[in-house]
Length: 250
Image (cartoon, rainbow, N blue to C red; front, top):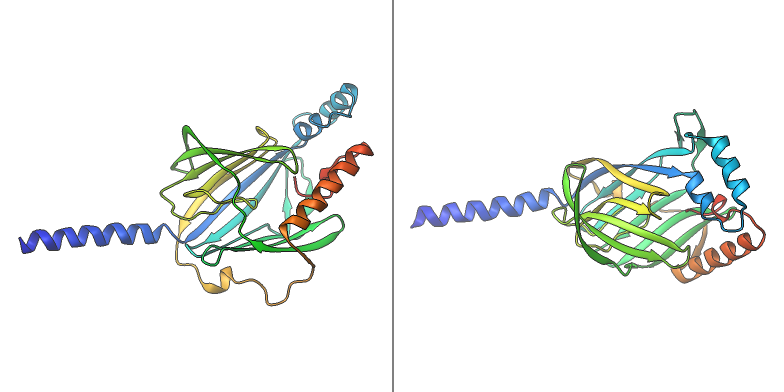
Protein backbone atom coordinates (compact mmCIF):
# COMPACT_ATOMS: atom_id res chain seq x y z
CA UNK A 1 0.00 0.00 0.00
CA UNK A 2 2.82 2.37 0.90
CA UNK A 3 4.45 1.74 -2.49
CA UNK A 4 1.16 2.51 -4.27
CA UNK A 5 0.76 5.80 -2.39
CA UNK A 6 4.34 6.83 -3.18
CA UNK A 7 3.81 6.00 -6.85
CA UNK A 8 0.60 8.08 -6.96
CA UNK A 9 2.34 11.02 -5.29
CA UNK A 10 5.14 10.83 -7.81
CA UNK A 11 2.66 10.82 -10.71
CA UNK A 12 0.77 13.83 -9.32
CA UNK A 13 4.05 15.68 -8.79
CA UNK A 14 5.09 14.91 -12.38
CA UNK A 15 1.81 16.28 -13.73
CA UNK A 16 2.11 19.50 -11.71
CA UNK A 17 5.74 19.86 -12.81
CA UNK A 18 4.80 19.37 -16.47
CA UNK A 19 2.07 22.02 -16.19
CA UNK A 20 4.50 24.41 -14.51
CA UNK A 21 7.00 23.85 -17.29
CA UNK A 22 4.33 24.90 -19.83
CA UNK A 23 3.56 28.11 -17.96
CA UNK A 24 6.69 30.02 -18.94
CA UNK A 25 8.75 30.39 -22.07
CA UNK A 26 9.04 32.15 -25.41
CA UNK A 27 6.96 31.98 -28.58
CA UNK A 28 8.17 33.14 -32.00
CA UNK A 29 5.35 34.30 -34.26
CA UNK A 30 5.26 35.16 -37.94
CA UNK A 31 2.87 37.93 -38.95
CA UNK A 32 1.76 37.84 -42.60
CA UNK A 33 0.03 40.91 -44.00
CA UNK A 34 -1.77 41.09 -47.38
CA UNK A 35 -2.08 44.70 -48.54
CA UNK A 36 -4.41 44.05 -51.48
CA UNK A 37 -6.91 42.34 -49.17
CA UNK A 38 -6.96 45.41 -46.94
CA UNK A 39 -7.46 47.77 -49.88
CA UNK A 40 -10.21 45.60 -51.32
CA UNK A 41 -12.27 46.36 -48.20
CA UNK A 42 -12.12 50.13 -48.74
CA UNK A 43 -15.56 50.59 -50.25
CA UNK A 44 -14.92 54.10 -51.58
CA UNK A 45 -12.19 52.90 -53.98
CA UNK A 46 -13.32 52.04 -57.49
CA UNK A 47 -12.91 48.54 -58.87
CA UNK A 48 -10.48 50.02 -61.40
CA UNK A 49 -8.25 51.30 -58.59
CA UNK A 50 -8.37 47.94 -56.80
CA UNK A 51 -7.54 46.06 -60.00
CA UNK A 52 -4.65 48.44 -60.65
CA UNK A 53 -3.21 47.68 -57.21
CA UNK A 54 -3.42 43.96 -57.83
CA UNK A 55 -1.61 44.37 -61.15
CA UNK A 56 1.04 46.60 -59.54
CA UNK A 57 1.75 44.34 -56.57
CA UNK A 58 0.81 41.01 -58.08
CA UNK A 59 2.00 38.29 -55.74
CA UNK A 60 4.35 40.65 -53.88
CA UNK A 61 1.71 42.15 -51.59
CA UNK A 62 2.60 39.68 -48.82
CA UNK A 63 4.58 41.27 -45.98
CA UNK A 64 6.13 39.10 -43.28
CA UNK A 65 7.41 40.00 -39.86
CA UNK A 66 8.74 38.08 -36.88
CA UNK A 67 7.61 38.87 -33.33
CA UNK A 68 8.26 37.44 -29.89
CA UNK A 69 6.10 36.73 -26.87
CA UNK A 70 7.85 36.05 -23.55
CA UNK A 71 5.57 34.82 -20.80
CA UNK A 72 4.94 33.13 -17.51
CA UNK A 73 1.70 32.57 -15.61
CA UNK A 74 1.85 36.07 -14.07
CA UNK A 75 3.13 38.35 -16.83
CA UNK A 76 3.96 38.59 -20.53
CA UNK A 77 5.81 40.83 -22.96
CA UNK A 78 5.16 41.04 -26.70
CA UNK A 79 7.20 43.11 -29.13
CA UNK A 80 8.58 43.67 -32.62
CA UNK A 81 12.15 43.81 -33.89
CA UNK A 82 13.41 47.31 -34.75
CA UNK A 83 14.26 46.63 -38.41
CA UNK A 84 13.18 43.72 -40.53
CA UNK A 85 12.81 42.64 -44.15
CA UNK A 86 9.10 42.22 -44.64
CA UNK A 87 8.86 40.49 -47.98
CA UNK A 88 10.77 38.45 -50.50
CA UNK A 89 10.66 41.50 -52.74
CA UNK A 90 13.31 43.05 -50.53
CA UNK A 91 11.30 45.78 -48.80
CA UNK A 92 13.01 46.82 -45.56
CA UNK A 93 10.97 48.80 -43.07
CA UNK A 94 11.91 50.47 -39.81
CA UNK A 95 9.34 49.34 -37.30
CA UNK A 96 7.74 51.97 -35.15
CA UNK A 97 7.30 51.45 -31.44
CA UNK A 98 5.01 48.60 -30.49
CA UNK A 99 5.39 46.91 -27.10
CA UNK A 100 2.76 45.16 -25.07
CA UNK A 101 2.98 44.23 -21.39
CA UNK A 102 0.42 42.15 -19.52
CA UNK A 103 0.18 41.69 -15.75
CA UNK A 104 -2.20 38.76 -15.32
CA UNK A 105 -1.70 38.59 -11.57
CA UNK A 106 -2.90 42.17 -10.98
CA UNK A 107 -5.19 42.50 -14.00
CA UNK A 108 -3.27 45.34 -15.65
CA UNK A 109 -2.06 46.14 -19.18
CA UNK A 110 0.41 48.62 -20.66
CA UNK A 111 0.91 49.11 -24.40
CA UNK A 112 3.46 51.38 -26.07
CA UNK A 113 2.22 52.16 -29.60
CA UNK A 114 3.41 54.62 -32.23
CA UNK A 115 0.43 55.87 -34.23
CA UNK A 116 -0.98 59.06 -35.72
CA UNK A 117 2.47 60.63 -35.67
CA UNK A 118 2.90 60.23 -31.90
CA UNK A 119 3.80 57.60 -29.32
CA UNK A 120 1.07 56.64 -26.87
CA UNK A 121 1.24 54.70 -23.62
CA UNK A 122 -2.07 52.94 -23.06
CA UNK A 123 -2.51 51.98 -19.41
CA UNK A 124 -5.65 50.31 -18.10
CA UNK A 125 -7.11 47.22 -16.50
CA UNK A 126 -6.91 44.08 -18.62
CA UNK A 127 -9.53 44.12 -21.36
CA UNK A 128 -11.09 40.76 -22.28
CA UNK A 129 -12.77 40.47 -25.69
CA UNK A 130 -16.20 38.90 -25.88
CA UNK A 131 -14.96 35.57 -27.21
CA UNK A 132 -17.19 32.80 -28.52
CA UNK A 133 -15.49 29.40 -28.47
CA UNK A 134 -16.39 27.36 -31.54
CA UNK A 135 -16.57 23.62 -32.10
CA UNK A 136 -13.49 23.51 -34.34
CA UNK A 137 -9.92 22.38 -33.77
CA UNK A 138 -6.67 22.40 -35.73
CA UNK A 139 -2.95 21.96 -35.13
CA UNK A 140 -0.70 25.00 -34.78
CA UNK A 141 3.04 24.65 -34.06
CA UNK A 142 2.51 21.09 -32.89
CA UNK A 143 -0.36 21.91 -30.51
CA UNK A 144 -4.00 21.02 -30.91
CA UNK A 145 -5.89 24.31 -30.74
CA UNK A 146 -9.53 25.31 -30.35
CA UNK A 147 -11.15 28.10 -32.36
CA UNK A 148 -12.65 31.24 -30.83
CA UNK A 149 -14.11 34.31 -32.55
CA UNK A 150 -14.80 37.90 -31.62
CA UNK A 151 -15.16 41.29 -33.31
CA UNK A 152 -13.21 44.53 -33.15
CA UNK A 153 -16.15 46.92 -33.31
CA UNK A 154 -13.89 49.99 -33.54
CA UNK A 155 -12.04 48.86 -36.66
CA UNK A 156 -14.84 46.68 -38.01
CA UNK A 157 -12.76 43.51 -38.03
CA UNK A 158 -13.60 39.86 -37.58
CA UNK A 159 -11.06 38.21 -35.25
CA UNK A 160 -10.43 34.46 -35.21
CA UNK A 161 -8.11 32.94 -32.61
CA UNK A 162 -6.75 29.42 -32.24
CA UNK A 163 -5.70 28.72 -28.64
CA UNK A 164 -3.95 25.81 -26.92
CA UNK A 165 -5.59 25.02 -23.59
CA UNK A 166 -2.61 22.87 -22.57
CA UNK A 167 -0.48 26.04 -22.42
CA UNK A 168 -2.26 27.46 -19.34
CA UNK A 169 -1.56 31.17 -19.88
CA UNK A 170 -4.29 33.55 -21.03
CA UNK A 171 -2.07 35.43 -23.49
CA UNK A 172 -1.41 35.86 -27.17
CA UNK A 173 -0.13 38.15 -29.95
CA UNK A 174 -1.31 41.55 -31.18
CA UNK A 175 -2.93 42.78 -27.93
CA UNK A 176 -5.22 39.74 -27.76
CA UNK A 177 -5.73 37.29 -24.90
CA UNK A 178 -8.41 36.37 -22.41
CA UNK A 179 -8.93 32.76 -23.50
CA UNK A 180 -8.37 29.62 -21.38
CA UNK A 181 -5.01 28.96 -23.04
CA UNK A 182 -2.34 30.62 -25.17
CA UNK A 183 -3.36 31.99 -28.58
CA UNK A 184 -1.05 30.41 -31.16
CA UNK A 185 -2.74 31.83 -34.26
CA UNK A 186 -4.67 35.06 -34.78
CA UNK A 187 -6.53 35.81 -38.03
CA UNK A 188 -7.86 39.30 -38.79
CA UNK A 189 -10.65 39.52 -41.39
CA UNK A 190 -10.27 36.05 -42.89
CA UNK A 191 -6.64 36.36 -43.94
CA UNK A 192 -5.88 40.10 -44.13
CA UNK A 193 -3.33 39.52 -41.36
CA UNK A 194 -2.49 36.11 -39.93
CA UNK A 195 -0.12 35.85 -36.96
CA UNK A 196 1.04 32.25 -36.42
CA UNK A 197 3.32 30.67 -33.83
CA UNK A 198 6.32 29.09 -35.54
CA UNK A 199 8.20 27.93 -32.45
CA UNK A 200 7.24 27.44 -28.81
CA UNK A 201 10.06 27.16 -26.29
CA UNK A 202 9.40 26.38 -22.64
CA UNK A 203 12.20 27.77 -20.50
CA UNK A 204 12.75 29.74 -17.30
CA UNK A 205 11.91 33.42 -17.82
CA UNK A 206 13.71 36.10 -15.82
CA UNK A 207 12.02 39.09 -14.21
CA UNK A 208 14.18 41.40 -16.34
CA UNK A 209 12.71 39.95 -19.57
CA UNK A 210 9.19 40.87 -18.48
CA UNK A 211 9.90 44.15 -16.71
CA UNK A 212 8.72 47.41 -18.23
CA UNK A 213 11.32 50.14 -18.74
CA UNK A 214 11.54 52.51 -15.78
CA UNK A 215 11.01 55.43 -18.16
CA UNK A 216 8.81 55.31 -21.25
CA UNK A 217 8.29 58.34 -23.46
CA UNK A 218 4.80 58.89 -24.75
CA UNK A 219 1.39 60.37 -24.03
CA UNK A 220 -0.53 58.36 -21.43
CA UNK A 221 -4.12 57.46 -22.25
CA UNK A 222 -6.59 54.73 -21.29
CA UNK A 223 -8.40 52.21 -23.48
CA UNK A 224 -11.48 54.41 -23.90
CA UNK A 225 -9.39 57.31 -25.19
CA UNK A 226 -7.43 54.95 -27.47
CA UNK A 227 -10.68 53.69 -29.01
CA UNK A 228 -11.92 57.26 -29.45
CA UNK A 229 -8.72 58.19 -31.30
CA UNK A 230 -9.10 55.14 -33.55
CA UNK A 231 -12.76 55.83 -34.31
CA UNK A 232 -12.18 59.49 -35.14
CA UNK A 233 -9.19 58.75 -37.36
CA UNK A 234 -10.96 55.97 -39.27
CA UNK A 235 -14.06 58.12 -39.81
CA UNK A 236 -12.02 61.12 -41.01
CA UNK A 237 -9.84 58.96 -43.29
CA UNK A 238 -12.82 57.33 -44.95
CA UNK A 239 -14.43 60.72 -45.46
CA UNK A 240 -11.21 61.94 -47.14
CA UNK A 241 -10.88 58.71 -49.18
CA UNK A 242 -7.62 57.74 -47.47
CA UNK A 243 -6.48 54.39 -46.10
CA UNK A 244 -6.69 54.84 -42.31
CA UNK A 245 -4.24 52.00 -41.65
CA UNK A 246 -1.18 53.79 -42.97
CA UNK A 247 -0.91 55.54 -39.60
CA UNK A 248 -2.54 53.15 -37.11
CA UNK A 249 -2.06 49.42 -36.45
CA UNK A 250 -4.40 47.28 -38.56
